[in-house]
Length: 86
Image (cartoon, rainbow, N blue to C red; front, side, top):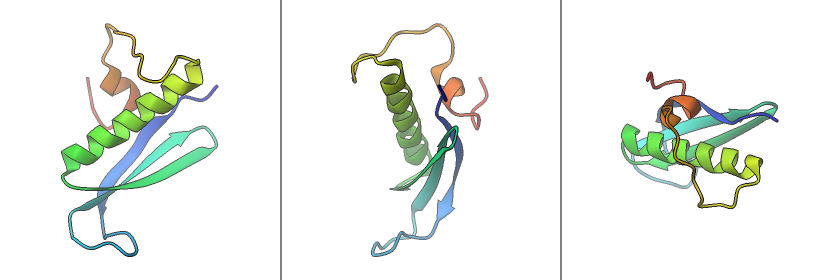
């Protein structure tokens, strides 16, 4: 079973039909699956959204009901986002 991780987050032009210059494009990968998303706001907001998506996707893979998160002693952000060092 593949685990999803954040591959990249970068400044991006607005998606088609949208306005503004504060857009970020994030890429999430899980084996053969790639998810591309866009977030308007700051880099920090885009990172939070991408991490939340990864945590949600990986939680669904374990069969745990959505919204139930297990406390862990390791750094969960470093587990899902290789762009962040622990």
